[in-house]
Amino acid sequence: MHNRRNHALIVLNAVLVLGLAVLALSPEAGAGGAQPGATGRPRGDYTMVAGQLNFGNSSSVWIVDSSNQEIVTLRWDEPRRNFEGIGYRNIAEDAAARPGR
Image (cartoon, rainbow, N blue to C red; front, side, top):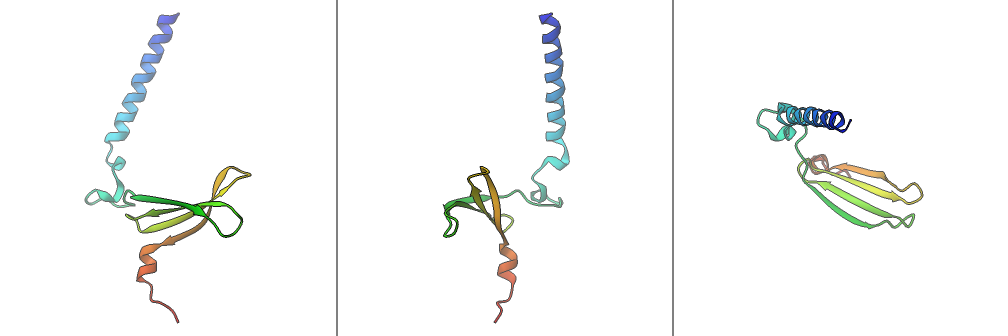
């Protein structure tokens, strides 16, 4: 009984390792746009800063992705115990925009 169960677990692990190897070695598994000639989103380079908001007495987190020139602001919702998105900006678009009057 134990030998049959062990054999099944060994086969299952071998299949999972093989599947992981196939996924890791596939061309799409790289860092997206970081590969020469690849299209898509480059791998992010993140910086996170925590703080308090002036409204609602709640904590927040600002996450800056310097590789993709984006910033996201999240608020911690204590009753639901999860993050809630409250803001997004594309830094590159903001820098390229002409200031209005």
